[in-house]
Image (tube, rainbow, N blue to C red; front, top):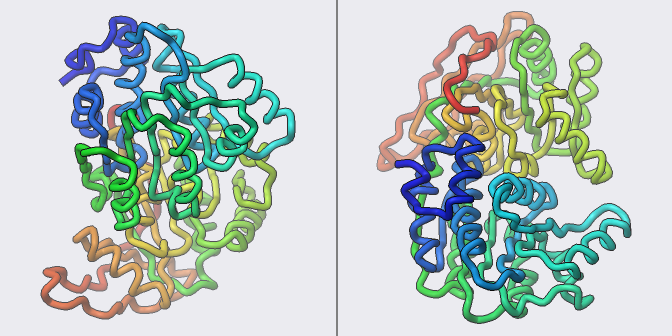
Length: 412
């Protein structure tokens, strides 16, 4: 299947061809026809599957074929970074279309508010907004949503985790009852079902399996004491040839500590955390995306917010608190049919959490022997799962491993 099979407007098809888009991803194949038929949609798909294009392309096609051009679409996203990424994709897809868009988000100084207000007053066709700033603009009377035809909730589960449920309901009261609503979520817990039941009408449901990491990811783990972790990271990274490395730590304190440790051994790394100003965070992300920075350290905020191709090593300094978080973290590598490596460091207290991850993905993740200079780590002995799960307790499999880049496949 190719994008020409969707019978998009010629200008949109031309734009896709110029960007090298040929074959749609599974979520695009499933979602685009349904959205073009004007159905409401609830879709389960994680970042990296092509979900943004899955809803943007049919919406852009609708806009260019509309007789009247007005504020057509509202996209609500949980973070400033995601709003900016969606806006950038719109700019790329609509290069030949002349469709206007603006990201609306908080942070920064009053100048950003004024810029957003002026742009909104001038009129745009697509708004991509974080809930809090959008409500502020609505309260000021800058935006009128009376004629919005499409509402998109992107990363809906993340928004609910951040406490935006009431904000979303408040925003929806400004929208016309007759509209198309598209809800995209990486996971589908009961609270997402409840939200969908409240705001969607007879939705079509689309599920792209997310409980399995991409086949191109080599997954490895070390059973390790906390005091050995920084030393192991230094050993793994000091002489490696990886070009793009993402390290996740569960706390801001660990992020800062690891940043200092890597700087001491001469590695060019930067940390991103809540103590930084927004412009500092954006600058660091831009450096990483442009390959000017090879090592980025952060908390789980990054696992869903970052949209960068070419990451070939992900390291979990701590075991993620939830199996789904593990999928999101390591999903930053091996995107677009490439390959990558994911390494997780497991202390004694985290063994049961890691075993739950192995149980969920139905796979034993190889345990690698620590370098001799670090000594032995704790034995990996998580509690056995009930026999009815069909998943056997992993063997204490050991191998000697020093990371080397894996060859990249097509895409990237």
